[in-house]
Image 1 (cartoon, helix red, strand yellow):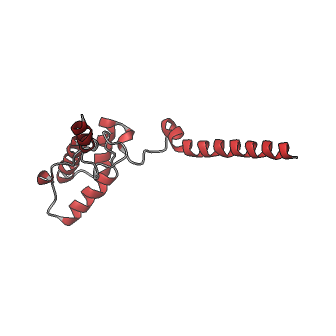
Image 2 (cartoon, helix red, strand yellow):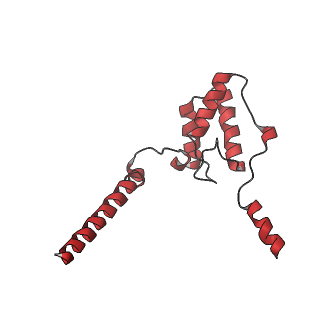
Image 3 (spheres, one colour):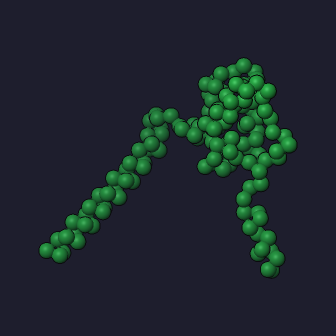
Length: 131
């Protein structure tokens, strides 16, 4: 029992991708373009990381796909459009502002306003009780 408890933390994080299979372009400009584009795409497995940072197999597959399309002469916009058509807007680290994402963009401000309103009411009630 003690052995399994001590071994458990080693499985708590995803293992990084195999570094022996890392693809790179020999052209530094193409490599920079690929890395920049990879930082703008979300790993749908990790969700909080870009595909450039993630070690998941999904991120490795999308990195490979991005590099194939760059090598094929597609523009960044064409690659993004292809991936959005395949996986939806959530693949973008910065989803576009459009009617179906307004709540996503406005939620932090709504929560902050609601929290401020509750704090103001609480302070007002506490001040009226003291008086």
